[in-house]
Amino acid sequence: MVRQIAPFGNVVQPGCSEWGSFTGFLILILSYVTSPQCRTIFQVSHSVSDSSAPYRLSDALNRHIPGLKSTLLLRRRKKIDGLEIHRTPARRATDALRRHLAHGFDILLPERRKDLPFSLNVLGMGFDTAQMEKADVVHLHWIGGRTVDFSQLRHIRRPLVYTLHDMFACTAGCHCTMDCSLFQDECRGNCPQLGAPRLFRNIPAWLFSRKRRAFGRIPSLTLVTPSLWLKREVERSCMFPGRKIVQIYNPWSMIIFARQVLPKVFNVASMKRGFEGRILRRLRGDCVP
Image 1 (cartoon, rainbow, N blue to C red):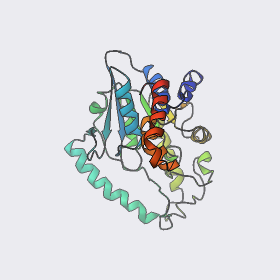
Image 2 (tube, helix red, strand yellow; image 1 turned 135 degrees about the vertical axis):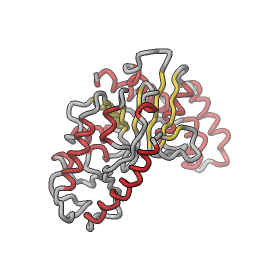
Image 3 (cartoon, helix red, strand yellow; image 1 turned 90 degrees about the vertical axis):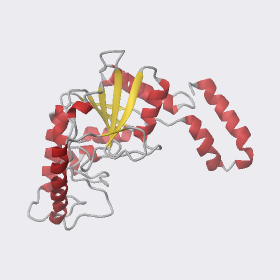
Image 4 (cartoon, rainbow, N blue to C red; image 1 turned 120 degrees about the vertical axis):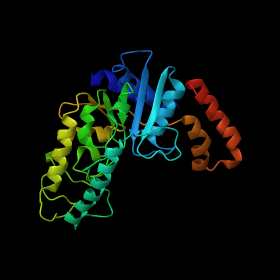
């Protein structure tokens, strides 16, 4: 199945990476959606901006695919057009207590490096399963830290697609391994980012096994990486045995690229109108704007 899907993720028409990228994602998800009249996707993330990959993908799908509705489902919506992840009042109270307990883990890690991000992914916040199941496909993005309770993902009775934007999903918690290969062996050994933990020396291995157990209980899970390099790294990890891994590039509008990026890179302010016009005419001829 990967061999049938993966090439579509690599098809990028000349001058139009946005079209090739979300076409690959569309082909991936259509195999899950049973009703052509009801095609909805939730893009789940902690928070996004209008320049982030989840936002660009959701916007591209809504603009280019008639009948398909992509909605951002966020922990912190801020000013972004989307929905917030629901929690019951009882779960909110529980999460408040769990937040204080999660901070206690820092006491056990006195030598933890502060210059590199490491998400402990313990005591995550809850979510309303019924809200998640209003979509045909749930697409996970940045769910690290306490964004969601990993142990509860298995209760969502919908296919899950998880796009990995860094290495967090296939490690004990680090987002960049910095040439460390322990993630290939369940993060057993001395973690260079956590240092020597107090009391419990096997914290990295425990975090890894806890995460792998949560992912292993999900009935339907497909992994997406935006680069071939990250796909190879995920395959080296033992976090997702037997799971389908697909490489699809992140979407990027070439219209915006031509208008905002190219003139700055080439410093053609005096030629901007003519230069931009030639680029845009080429784009309109090569792909759907």
